[in-house]
Image (cartoon, rainbow, N blue to C red; front, side):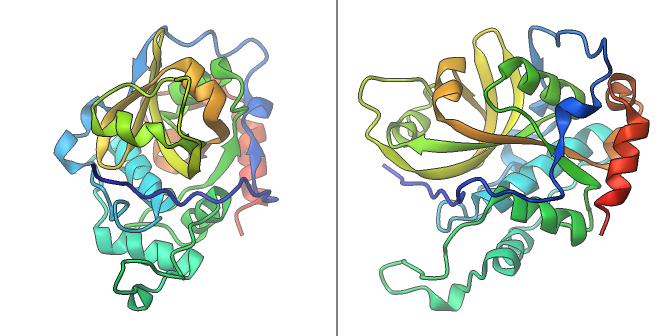
Length: 258
C-alpha cells in the first residue's frame, strides 16, 4: 500500500492573518446551500500529486490545487508545473533535493506552516498568480467553514491526520472516525472544495473528490483559511462582494499588502 507524505507544521500565528467573521455583513450571508461543490470544473486527471507522495510539500500542493480551483471559475484554469511547486517548497522551507539520502530520507524535507506558505503566495506568487491576503475561519464552526467555501470557493484546511486515513484513501473510502485510528501520523494540508449533509469534500494527493464526514473533520481539523484573490473578488460570481463588508476588507488588505 502506498504511503503518502504529509508536511504541515503546527498552526503558526501571523500578523497578516485576517478574521473571516469580521467581514460578514450583519444579516449575511444566509445559511449556505445544503450542498456546494466547486471542484467540478477541474478535470480529475489534472489535479496532480505535486510530488506529495515523495516529499512533505502538502502545503504547497494545496496552493496549486487552490489556484486551479479559483481560476477554473474565473477564466482559464491555471495548472502549475510540479517544478514550480517544489521550488516554492524549497524557497519557503529550505528543502534541498540534493540532500536526499539513498533510503529516500532528506533532513531538509521538514514541512511548512500554512501561514508561511500563504505569506509567500501573497508576496511572490505561484505560476504568476498572487493572492491579496487570507483570513482565518473558525475551523471548529462547520457553518462558518461552509460559508467560507460558499463565498470563496474553498478553504485551506489543516488536519492532524490519523494513520487510518491513508488506508481509507487508498481504498477509496470516506475519511471517517473509527475506534482505532492508528494514532496521528502528522499534520496535513488539504483543500476543502465542497460540503453537504453527509460531510466535506477535499482535494489531496492528486484526488479531487476525497470525502470526509463532519465527525472526522471535527476530530482532526486544527486550522482553516480562505484566500482572497482579485480575480475572485471582482468576478461575476458576485458571492464575495455581495456577502461581505468590502470596504472593511479592502482597507485591511491595504494594511497587509507589504
